[in-house]
Image (tube, rainbow, N blue to C red; front, top):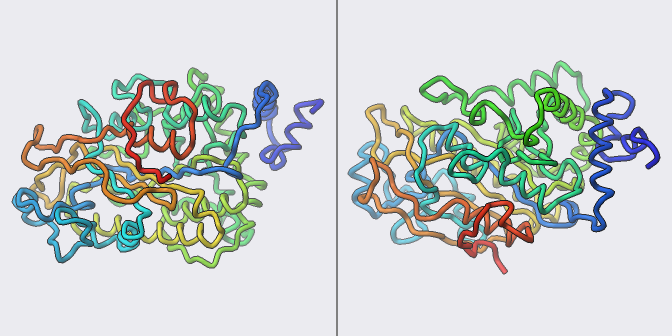
Length: 435
């Protein structure tokens, strides 16, 4: 490349933005290009290697009514209105069963494609949405890190990779993408959804986008939005100025334009997705995978899990939406022939209290469960289900550190060569990824 403008026009992302964007966009692409030239080895990408999808269950998913300890009398005593009976569950063992709102995940478990990690949490847990989300996103229990666990993976294992090495569909870029060099991109422009209307009018696309990203019905009791990262700062480049952050956000909006739309439109699936935000975003992820995006990590969220009031119906509904979305997503991947290249992990910032509250709901707790799904997974139950009688301030105590899950996926699925600069320490691997 002789000039940055030539580079801008020649790249997958730049092709959509050439001649229409401010000079700082050219400068950004030029910097990325110069960094890439310094590397002798071309990094692997999502075009030719494994892909991780991270799905946040935002608000604090109630793990006890997701993976239900139906055989434990303490569970039924603590939840006289909310407890699930054995006959209403998908039985996984002689102790636990899966919420019946998730028949597809039940079938994945039976087929050996779903790993369920029990009692996931971290030492000295925090019940704040913001703080605990930040801890999960940064993998730093002291909540002091300026970078996220995925951003450190991008920096240390994907150096010189395409800016779209990580793509988030959140309203704001997640803290987990915070990086020193390459924080991925956050695609939240209305232009991204034009293809859904077959190239329809911008106003129509904007209306759709507004509906897609409207707040969840279940708001936190303090009135704050759980979508905002801890401290109000989304993930980005560590140490960047406010001006640089605004410039990069503008770049992200441009990146989400014509070329990515062209890639997303390549795949014409026969699989039906329903109308929920999580289904629509997983539809987009599937289209981008089919279109050959170089992305290694996709990040989506499913909100509304802050179930303080009248939990039973709302929680089952949310789990049902998750199950339906995942059924469509994995069917789409199988139709593409990409099902063996993709693993999906769920997480939530914390679980709920063991005892139900006076409003037939549950309050902020600590440990919970999470799912790891895909053909690359060694299915089964991992970790030990926490005791429901040996509690700490009314909460179950974690039996698996969430960084063991991260380390297992980073080493065995994404094949990161060195976990020390990403996680800062070694954690026992779970063996959740198949041979």
